[in-house]
Image 1 (cartoon, rainbow, N blue to C red):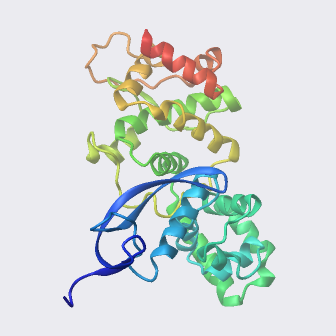
Image 2: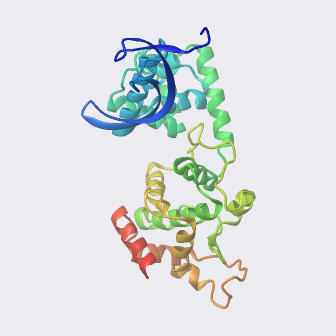
Image 3: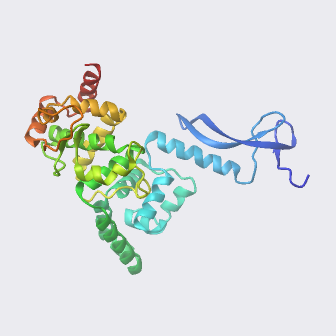
Length: 328
């Protein structure tokens, strides 16, 4: 009997044996229908929910709050933890850098919900190192000397590991999509460069984009990720520290987001087929068999003209273009 796990069941009005099952919970919270996963205790006799330990209701409340924050687009605790790890700082130092009250970040871990304004500041700190270091200098007087030196040292390390612009773009795509194969990444990089012409009128990626048999390819990216084959990229450095974006502007990041939220919705094979329908790639494949290797560099003027001509500058226009490619 000593090894039995017991919890009080309100329906049975007694201590009962229970099972713990991972369940998806759907409920209304602050006017929003939210869904979240939680390990629920269930009475073995009546199947009612039971609190299996003293922290049970606290854990459930935190999961509910986190689901609510994700639903309405506020920063969650996982993302705040990423900030702390990325910049190697504590909660109080982060609050000082952001210009918040000293206990603000700690309160978020205690269940407080951030305002939209504070949430946007934290999102920007997570994804924009230059914005972060600007806040550090602005609020330098709030930081202890040792904390300031520690932050500057970590920032310098982040910038050094950031790599080239195309590396930062690839990192951003992989991080924000969760699962992306090398084939899909190649196409999304190419589409990002083209869409940037349509949106900002400028070239985004300056490395040579070659017309290979399976569509446009950046050779250095191919060589970097070919070890993953047809599997999603998992290099161990993604998805845990946000992204180093020191070489990207806000407008360029918006373009990449646009590509992720349109082209990124489709399979690698579909992306390959779309790339095969585009004139800049087709022009450089003249004289080649379908499966024949080629290293012709795709002309940037041709890419610019194609994306501007097809008005690939908004989510609506891009989705319309994609559906036309799929149906043709």
